[in-house]
Amino acid sequence: MAHERNASSVGRVSRASFFCLFAVTFTLFVLSWFFVLRSTGRPSFLDYSLIPSSRLFSTVESKGTDQGSNKVETFSWDQGVSVDSAAEEDRRSNTGGDKCEDASRASVLRVYMYDLPPEYHFGLLGWTPKSGEIWPDIQSHIPGYAGGLNLQHSIEYWMTLDLLYSEFAPVDGRSAVRVHNSSEADIIFVPFFSSLSYNRYSKVEPPEKSSKNKLLQEKLVCYLTSQKEWIRSNGRDHVILAHHPNSMVDARTKLWTCMFILADFGRYPPNIANINKDIIAPYKHVVQNFDNDLSGFDDRPTLLYFQGAIYRKDGGLVRQELYYLLKDEKDIHFAFGSVQKGGLKQAMNGMRASKFCLNIAGDTPSSNRLFDAIVSHCVPVIISDDIELPFEDVLDYSEFSVFIRTSDALKEKFIVNLIRNITRDEWTRKWQRLKEIERFYEYQYPSKEGDAVQMIWQAVARKVPAVRLKINRARRFSRFGTRREKVVTGRIPSPGNFR
Image (cartoon, rainbow, N blue to C red; front, side):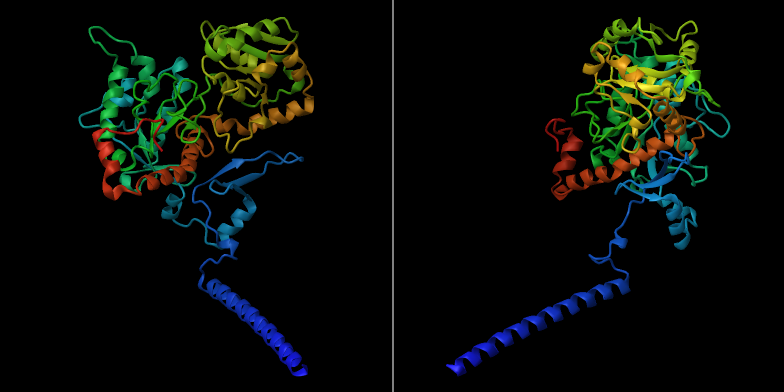
């Protein structure tokens, strides 16, 4: 019996020793591989510092600190990580910085732009090309854009000019550059001035049976769907500007796979346009900038301001209900107005003299009034349940706006009580923030870092990884030729069934 107990004890000790030896050996094996990978520069599962970050960066000005200083942050769009600018500068200096133009170009969006005939773009502005010309020589002459309310949807003009300018401008500070080889491009840009085409050429001129606007759209569809760039991606990497709600109305159902840049989604079914694939861009404001604005809380006597069309259809029906609720309230200006007979200047002066400006849904969820209020530093009060806002993935609109649900706004005294209870300090913080972010909504030529043009290109860049994912997934069975055959023959699945 003693012999059996000793044998059992020896067995237990041997198994325990073997287990300890195995554990030590395995630990040493793992550690040895870790140090080998570190020494060779290859990332290991323990080395988080080597996780790749996005190559597409931009800078936006963050909310100021309590002391009033403005902290600038750099955002990695792929990971959503913010890095303090000082730390980012140290990183660049330690790694040599951006020392050559090739390195700079690697960090910007590469855009291939079709050389469409002038009838699609500057020819719509009355520009007459010389023999063989496609684009105007913008170093010597820039065709002017149409005036009046046409300007609010002029995004197509500024974006196209910016690409043309990128060919001879410094790369530093730019968000996009034009490339002439489509295989090198991140996205494909379609330079059709669709909003201008609708505004100027949507009426049928006898004896014609179709409008020029409709004919241009039909020709554009035929052109795009026959290009190798479109066939290669089924149009997913194409960017089309359709900022006016009625622009591209005939072509949108045929080109729905592309990335649209829009004012809102009010007149689009969700299977044609949606926030997952498309971009909301700001209107161009039509009132002048409020430069050197020193007005404080007490310098703006009007509490709440609205002037515009009151009787609207669709979602805009709320305007007339709010009119009857607010028209007799003290310190509130709610009146009909238009841009005619000095109405634009009157609206500008009214906004500059008001603490808050109403932005109410009209025929569509958005309107130019929001951006007029921003550059007038009049805190927007947004009553539009379905509104989508430009750059909201990087901007917190609650820092400089007030949001009210339509159902609440229609309650007796709700708006008045809410606005009157906003303190001087809270209003001042929003007013200060408006002055900090207004540059993000500024269209200009040449574009400047952080303006509306650059912000839109950055928004496009943030969509690129998702676009590439869709394209690559669609190529899984491309060796069988089924996808290409469907595109070439026009047998493309309907938007509701396509995945």
